[in-house]
Image (cartoon, rainbow, N blue to C red; front, top):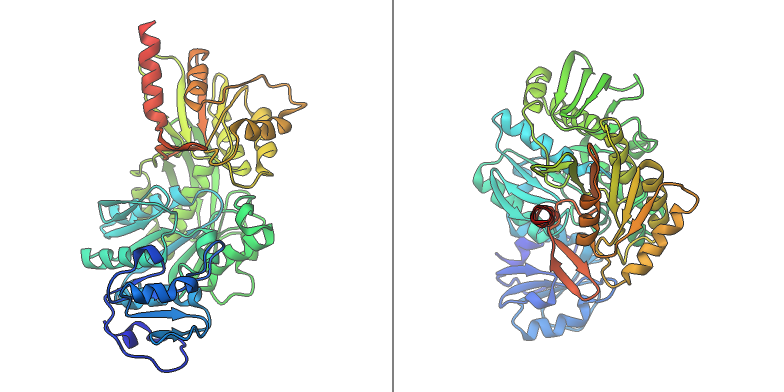
Amino acid sequence: MKLSQLLKGIEVSGGYNDAEITDVTQDSRNITKGCLFVCIKGNTFDGHSAAAQALQKGAAAVLVERDLGLDAQVITPNTRAVYSAVCANFFGRPAERLRLVGITGTNGKTTTAFLIKQILDSLGKKTGLIGTVQNMVGSEVYPAKFTTPDPYELQSLFALMVKAGCEFCVMEVSSQALAQGRVNGIEFEVGAFTNLTQDHLDYHKTFENYFAAKRLLFESCRTAVTNADDPHGLAITNGLACKTVSYAVNTNNADFVAKNVRFKTTGVDYDLVCDDIARVRCPIPGRFSVYNSLCAAAVCVTLGFELHSVIASLETSHGVKGRIEVVPTPGTDYTVIIDYAHSPDGLDNIISSLREIATGRIVTVFGCGGDRDKTKRPKMGKIAAELSDYCVVTSDNPRSEDPSAIINDILEGMKGVSTPFTVVENRKEAIRFAMENAKKNDIILLAGKGHETYQILPTGTIHFDEREAVRDILGDISKK
């Protein structure tokens, strides 16, 4: 591809040699002969410092923000802002041939995205998925490193979807991705908002910045489907050009409303009231499943599908790995559930939902991530202590931090709450403690890791799958 084709629609200054470009990268470690190296200034590394070296390694050109005095440089005002467009041009702008649904919010993105994909698949529409747990092109599964991939990987996934004949793509859109411009230039047919609570303040610094990042999605969508029960649900689209469609459980003043909600161990039932009415039976338990399924249904109806067909498809949906996932524990009289809840609101939601179906104790095994927002830790400790019958405080992904220091931060929030607790720093041993001391009808909640199959320790990353841990512990218990 010629450099001029790659830069189509991008503001550049000065002349340049219209070289043949073989690839695009912003990573100086991935320089290949004939590529375009896009120099982006990050928090710890400025790509401009590697521009000259990139040309020496064989790059055909470098895209820069300032004159570096290099023969093969092209100058643009903001390289980060245009990188998404450069990647889109390189892959032939595949997103323009897909009907895109973007989902943002603190909690519920993953399950809602899976539900929408499952509904569309059931309705005979080949659909791609991009998200936290995995990426999918139709039924083909690709590993996911980030909730929203970098622009190069994202556009390559779009291209794979187009080649495979996908009509739709449903994707989770994280606040970091929005702030970093990873989806710049992409138009979403529908943007969906789940909720907004404290998270990622280690990155955004303030809640206002977090909200502003989420709002960026709705500047690039034609229709917004938003949660009217959330205090930020209507504000997030206020003053924007997109059409707004609302959904709610606690108010009748919305376009899609869930009424007569019933909670069961096998799922949730409710009446969905819009221009029509239908009885929904979602086979995923928990109060948040009402919101997730309601949002998914609202999105699909907004896309033009008939309500009762959508509801029939929703009833055949299945759960998502690491989201209120019941782990098999044959021969026991208690239940083990894995959930990704790793924020104060997420922990509150999952324990409160389990309380509605629990007949015994709720034993919560949880920790907090290291190198992340420290203010969450005492809040999560307080929530777990107030809502659980017993807590086992342990490690999550401590990363570079001392695990015991993270635990001490959690314990600060548990002071003054009478709920008994035990500290077991090693996560597998914490799970073992909970299982060995379980009582009849207990629900043991393993919160925080969800779909992850690893643990990031100060000494490095290790393989750690809680499903395997439960199975191993059951085997050890059976031998006693």
